[in-house]
Image 1 (cartoon, one colour):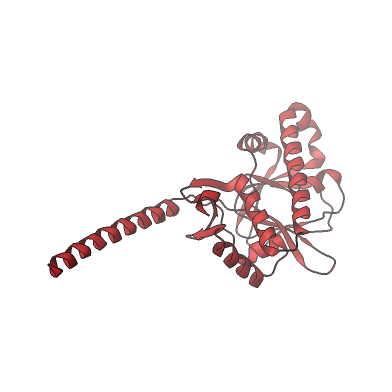
Image 2 (tube, rainbow, N blue to C red; image 1 turned 180 degrees about the vertical axis):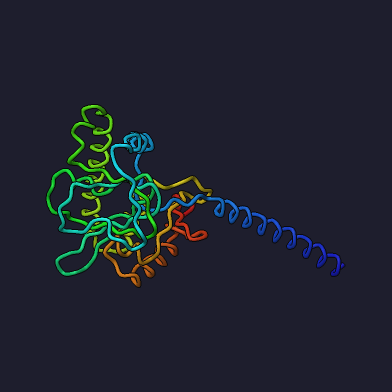
Length: 251
């Protein structure tokens, strides 16, 4: 009798283990199939098409890895539509500390604000990998805008959205707790890069702890501690390098 019970329990446990492993494998497979989206910024596809539709008004520019696209404090009428690659846009404070504003991936625009006001640039942009762009010259856009007002409207909407996001980020940076600043960043990314997941919302862009720290004015070590706290409080999880924002029903 004992042997029969033991055998039955072993079969039961084996079936349960198989079920659990099968579920975990499906979860890993789902995460592995997730398409990675580089960067921390995305614009509406319709706006991207309207801007790309005027590519003939600019010229193709390729930047090598670590090449400066434009530098803080310089004056230029050039701005860029990113076709491929990744661009880091940052500000160097008066104390020498660099604060990353965004990582701009494909189908994004950078440098347009300074190009039109023709004042010294308040930020710098560096190619983090080989990056292909369309370079536009704001000084030559008047005729283009008159013929294609939708192009001007698209750029205006992109610039306005950037200003709004920057204002919100400045407000959030005033938060004392690094966990709050990091969650603010994740929630903003959720609006652009999240896909549905059984556990909540999965961010399909990857950020290192160093990059998260640079965008939240937090050290890498502090980010690591804060991420551990957020995982322990069941607010986030990390699946295959992607951040999962847990929904309330999973907490």
